[in-house]
Image (cartoon, rainbow, N blue to C red):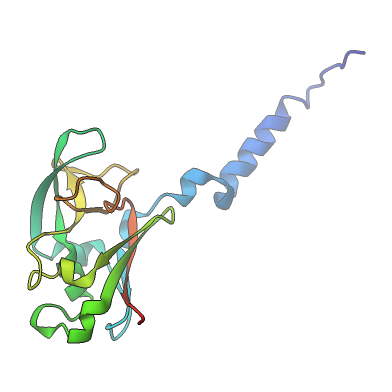
Length: 178
């Protein structure tokens, strides 16, 4: 038995395509995008209140450049602000103001797609460490591509890029529990 196609048959896939595009929660691409105007949320232990740092506020912080190989092995120049500066701009106590109990604090960086990485608070503090961890917004002089930006954490001296979080949305300070 053969079926006769009607004029309604070609519209069936178009209906589901339209539905997929109209319902953002069903579209995987929409879940992974971070609007550039959103900035970065900083919250957690040691802060008087959560802070939403806008792109304009982040742009006022001292800018730095670091080099590191990308996933493709090509050496890239990233520019942005030190993660330390972002945390202090949000009100975190670091450097000489870091209380002794702050040695057991860590920063949880969260991406738009749910990916997370952790940094000990002391490893971000220039009073304790010589490394600079960067919250980058540019690579090789250009804004980060949508797949990585608007903000990406860059750890220049690590062999793997596992903690180079792309599409950073939030930083949360956490006090480790004994």
